[in-house]
Image 1: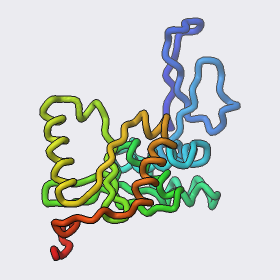
Image 2: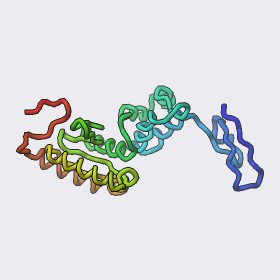
Image 3: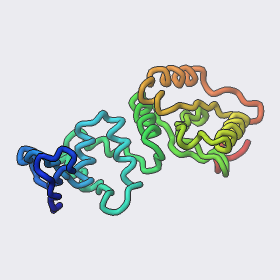
Image 4: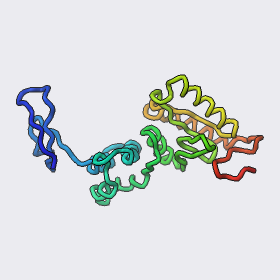
Length: 209
């Protein structure tokens, strides 16, 4: 049970009272309903678009302690509703919400993206399609420093040398311009894997021929 935090009557700047009431209809002015992380995750699966709901579930393992939802409890809250099937799309290896959304949208298009794949002993990529097309979900927050920018360019050049094709997409592209992203990906896949005179791209552990 979560205890209530008192507020000052008539003071709009006061924080809302938090309550663990089981029904929103029981709330009075100045109260906000508080639910468990597991119930909140279940509500996301029920009411958010599938791709964004999966992004919420993907991020769950990165939360700590009491903030982390229990997947078993989420499943119980859904009680066999169709949204429970979205739990099958969860992948704790995802490192960002943008990556999760892109992955789900590719799955919805009939593709089977591999996630967080090591392509060399030092290079891991966000998504890999058909064994050769790399999709990297980049962000200004983590890639804006001169050092990181230069390292990214070296990384991409290495992947291209190995025979991979690389496409970088931003948060804005994934969330606000997905059709353009899909047009580029589908065009590349339609062309097929490019020939590589060095013998083709290989993942870590694959035999080198």
